[in-house]
Image 1 (cartoon, rainbow, N blue to C red):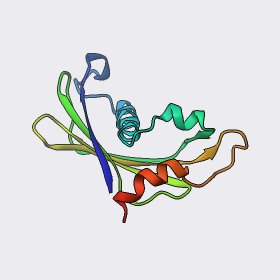
Image 2 (cartoon, rainbow, N blue to C red):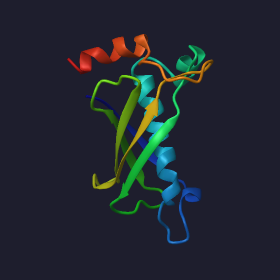
Image 3 (cartoon, rainbow, N blue to C red):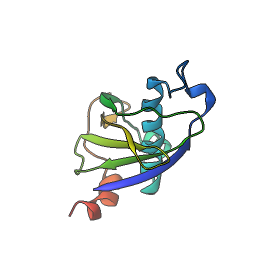
Image 4 (cartoon, one colour):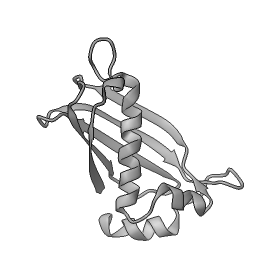
Length: 135
């Protein structure tokens, strides 16, 4: 398993009339954590795209356990628990500033050749970086 923790502070514009973080913001929080997960491996989304690989999201699941509020600092944990092949499954946990789990979810992305628009295997460079975490 390989995971990364990212901290974000809830901005006023991310809340709804009830004062809760609007539910549609959680996928954006997941994306921030996913991008940092890749960066922590020593590669960026931009570099992967420059190599001719795109990674569309094909599935997403979210579960809301408790609300987050304006100005709270959230910790978003992104983890990959199994070695990817043509798809990569990310798991997310969102904790509030007291450490309480308030949201969890997952999404699946597919490695796609940008030119042919066909699925492809995990890029070799990413595979080499992940291997030590899955042996």
